[in-house]
Length: 191
Image 1 (spheres, rainbow, N blue to C red):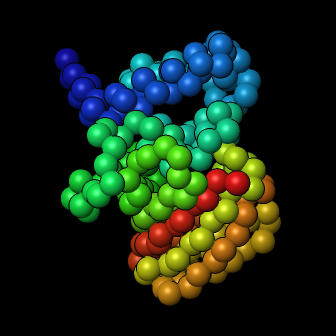
Image 2: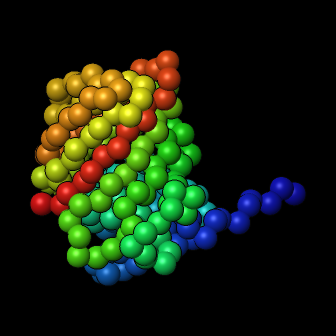
């Protein structure tokens, strides 16, 4: 009988935080399912740490909880510090797309801006139906590769060195057309 590997400590903290966010609002799993469009069974497995959430699922949960994904992930990072060497910066990988997210900014309360490094593999697509918080300001700087970013139906083709500043007001879609991974940094500022 094959055993499922135990979740990593970060995954356990993420599962616990997702459960606590729901309970803080006094929501049942059914209520959260209505707000997020995610099935009750999937939500239950996520909160128990039986499965890792994909970027798409986290995006839907963040929209329901009205918080940026970077803030949610920062809330579960251990030992907030002012300085974090690269080797200690938390990395999360989307099990569905292979998207790697590195939290560059040390987690802290009271700050309005966070920086995230993203690497999207060739051919991968991540789509969000709505922003977690309407009006989030993003500054996206392409480090290498190519990225097709669609915002409210408008496509932006980005290459190494390009910079795009925008506010999230509707859906967004990240697509890496290849042949290399899209590697970028996003500064996110809460309104």
